[in-house]
Image 1 (cartoon, one colour):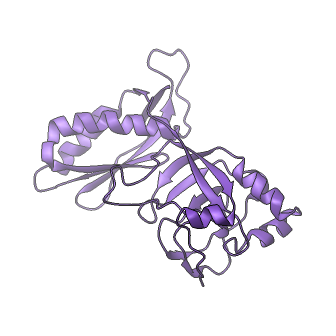
Image 2: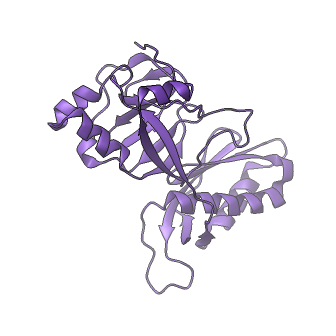
Length: 251
């Protein structure tokens, strides 16, 4: 897939060793139409990140620490002791303007098993009641959608997945839970996500995934990346337990 990404506005500082570039979709170089200021696709941001990384690595060497992309931003982390912020800012600006044509052929579709049983789907009944449908219908709506990884953050491995069926859109819980277990599959607003580790959370829990999502010792540490597609496969309780799932409690 080919897309074009360009810089949208000034590059902002993020502490002494960070810069944030806002990104916008743009016509491919040579196109006759004017630039259309809209969010780029996650796949385009990922491809742009790889392209920018090559240029900055060549110029900065070990002074470049990391590049962290999200849906329409790119965070560049660098060592201010070996790379002057003004130099990094200039290099980043030059890498993103004029529009950067990106080809991304690395996106994959990841299918993750989910158990939607009542022991783990703490909010499924309430979501069904709010939508005026049965629990089974909510499961169908949630598991039949194709999701896109739009950002990874909040906690290591926490992926914000866009593409939730609009009939399931719900505001966050009025009172967040103190403990949401690892693997909890939840929804909030127009997104869904899987909690990679136990943490507080205010999303509506619909089920649980038995797969270990974040493992820093694994290469890569996550089964998905920005721009990847994610699908959920409903499984029964026996399959959930056989895959290592646990029926735990939260608060």
